[in-house]
Picture 1 (cartoon, rainbow, N blue to C red):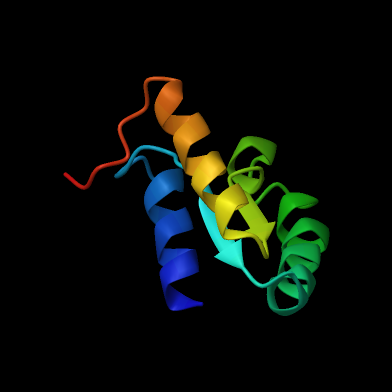
Picture 2: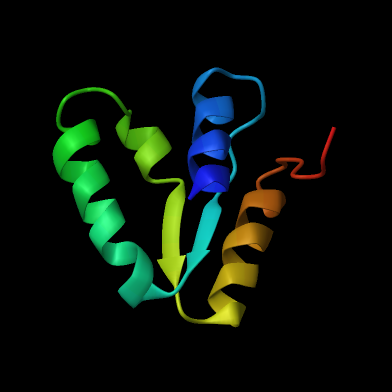
Length: 80
């Protein structure tokens, strides 16, 4: 959880470029994302664009596809 919120903070403060944050395990993450939507997104503490970066999957191929899609748009996801 710490890494998730640290990553989102760095994106929101523009210290790193936005990229898809892929979370494995729908059963594990769904409740948290529902809470983030209800409590943070609805109160303007998180933008819709930032929220859409949070992607849940149980499929490794989908995770790779999300990352590749981001890269194909010309976005560099390599570390600084």
